[in-house]
Image (cartoon, rainbow, N blue to C red):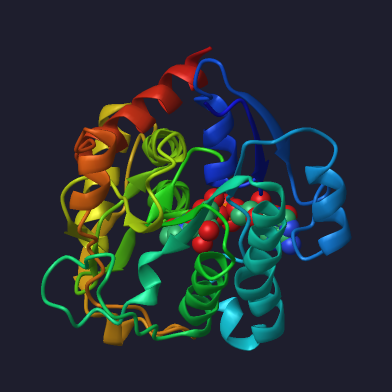
Length: 293
Ligand SMILES: NC(=O)c1ccc[n+]([C@@H]2O[C@H](COP(=O)([O-])OP(=O)(O)OC[C@H]3O[C@@H](n4cnc5c(N)ncnc54)[C@H](OP(=O)(O)O)[C@@H]3O)[C@@H](O)[C@H]2O)c1
């Protein structure tokens, strides 16, 4: 039975969500970057030796996908090397580890939802750096699992939902990519899944999780617009125009299709998750009621 868990990257979207749904009987030590830099092996050892830990969740990462293309060394230090340092420290102490990774390890050419054992072929530096981190964790000898996810959003954080709500209020018209398909994931539901998987020591290797369903960025934007207006988070909203990704060039190439097959995770944790539209509704509804307080 797990009792004390260290959360690395506790200031991020998933890190914060993890602290909002700590399972009963579990205590958490939550460390933000300023308190624990995961690229520093001495700091990792000192933190893990402060208490007796049974588990560690690594939610720390270099997540600036476009910036990573020109900041390769920093992306590799945090996403490729540091997860291995954490995992080796966990292996030496008998600590179970859950490491978060990304749908961007895939190239998007599968034509069906990606299974955990499908061959990875990242299109950019961020995806490649995360894939190397996965391998370091799985090769460490720790009791460890890698949980890949995608399109994560939460109220605190810079993400598609918070950015789009701002732009919808500021602009008259917005163009949004319609030929990249994935699944939005509310950090809150992802955090519940992290806790459920961490509690199953037999769950080792690679797992997938996102909310249920699939959509394009344009579909996601339309839902944010409609629900933002309905919840009173927007009084007026820009019109939305679908465009191909080719009309919105970015430094990093993104997969055209990165829907994840979650069947093995569903079997382990015993539920199939919530549809992305329902979780978006829950998040925006909570946001609107907090604004009224
Ligand atoms: N966001 C997404 O859409 C998405 C999609 C797929 C997978 N994921 C994965 O999900 C996980 C959590 O992502 P997220 O959305 O919560 O990202 P996030 O909001 O960017 O949080 C990442 C956190 O890691 C911290 N961090 C960066 N370098 C660090 C270091 N050297 N030591 C300690 N902490 C450090 C960051 O601190 P600073 O802010 O101070 O830099 C930030 O608080 C990551 O593994 C990410 O790759 C995310």
